[in-house]
Length: 76
Picture (cartoon, rainbow, N blue to C red):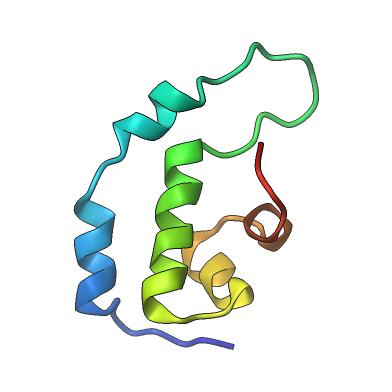
Protein backbone atom coordinates (compact mmCIF):
# COMPACT_ATOMS: atom_id res chain seq x y z
CA UNK A 1 0.00 0.00 0.00
CA UNK A 2 1.27 3.45 -0.94
CA UNK A 3 0.66 6.20 1.62
CA UNK A 4 1.31 9.70 0.31
CA UNK A 5 1.00 12.89 2.28
CA UNK A 6 1.82 14.94 -0.80
CA UNK A 7 2.52 14.15 -4.44
CA UNK A 8 6.11 14.27 -5.72
CA UNK A 9 7.13 17.30 -7.77
CA UNK A 10 7.33 15.39 -11.06
CA UNK A 11 3.77 14.08 -10.55
CA UNK A 12 2.50 17.62 -9.93
CA UNK A 13 4.22 18.73 -13.13
CA UNK A 14 2.62 15.93 -15.14
CA UNK A 15 -0.83 16.73 -13.74
CA UNK A 16 -0.59 20.27 -15.11
CA UNK A 17 0.05 19.07 -18.67
CA UNK A 18 -2.77 18.45 -21.13
CA UNK A 19 -2.84 16.02 -24.03
CA UNK A 20 -5.50 17.12 -26.56
CA UNK A 21 -3.81 15.04 -29.26
CA UNK A 22 -5.06 11.83 -27.59
CA UNK A 23 -8.68 12.91 -28.05
CA UNK A 24 -8.00 13.88 -31.67
CA UNK A 25 -6.32 10.57 -32.52
CA UNK A 26 -8.85 8.40 -30.68
CA UNK A 27 -12.23 10.17 -30.63
CA UNK A 28 -14.89 8.86 -28.27
CA UNK A 29 -17.25 6.43 -29.98
CA UNK A 30 -21.00 6.70 -29.64
CA UNK A 31 -22.54 5.29 -26.48
CA UNK A 32 -23.62 1.69 -27.11
CA UNK A 33 -24.48 0.71 -23.55
CA UNK A 34 -22.78 -0.37 -20.37
CA UNK A 35 -20.33 1.66 -18.35
CA UNK A 36 -18.99 4.77 -20.09
CA UNK A 37 -15.47 4.57 -18.66
CA UNK A 38 -12.68 7.08 -18.14
CA UNK A 39 -11.38 9.80 -20.43
CA UNK A 40 -8.52 8.54 -22.58
CA UNK A 41 -6.30 11.53 -21.87
CA UNK A 42 -6.71 11.03 -18.10
CA UNK A 43 -5.75 7.35 -18.33
CA UNK A 44 -2.81 8.26 -20.59
CA UNK A 45 -1.64 10.87 -18.05
CA UNK A 46 -1.71 8.37 -15.17
CA UNK A 47 0.12 5.75 -17.24
CA UNK A 48 2.85 8.33 -17.90
CA UNK A 49 2.99 9.06 -14.17
CA UNK A 50 3.35 5.33 -13.54
CA UNK A 51 6.26 5.24 -15.96
CA UNK A 52 8.16 8.21 -14.52
CA UNK A 53 7.63 7.30 -10.86
CA UNK A 54 8.18 3.54 -11.25
CA UNK A 55 5.09 2.81 -9.14
CA UNK A 56 3.12 -0.39 -9.69
CA UNK A 57 -0.39 -0.41 -11.19
CA UNK A 58 -2.09 -0.87 -7.82
CA UNK A 59 -0.41 2.20 -6.34
CA UNK A 60 -1.36 4.34 -9.33
CA UNK A 61 -4.93 3.05 -9.12
CA UNK A 62 -5.17 4.03 -5.45
CA UNK A 63 -3.79 7.52 -6.00
CA UNK A 64 -5.71 8.27 -9.21
CA UNK A 65 -9.05 6.69 -8.39
CA UNK A 66 -9.02 4.80 -11.69
CA UNK A 67 -9.76 1.11 -11.34
CA UNK A 68 -6.81 -1.29 -11.47
CA UNK A 69 -8.08 -3.41 -14.43
CA UNK A 70 -8.53 -0.27 -16.53
CA UNK A 71 -4.87 0.64 -16.10
CA UNK A 72 -3.58 -2.89 -16.70
CA UNK A 73 -5.55 -3.91 -19.76
CA UNK A 74 -4.93 -2.66 -23.26
CA UNK A 75 -7.25 0.26 -24.03
CA UNK A 76 -8.38 0.41 -27.64
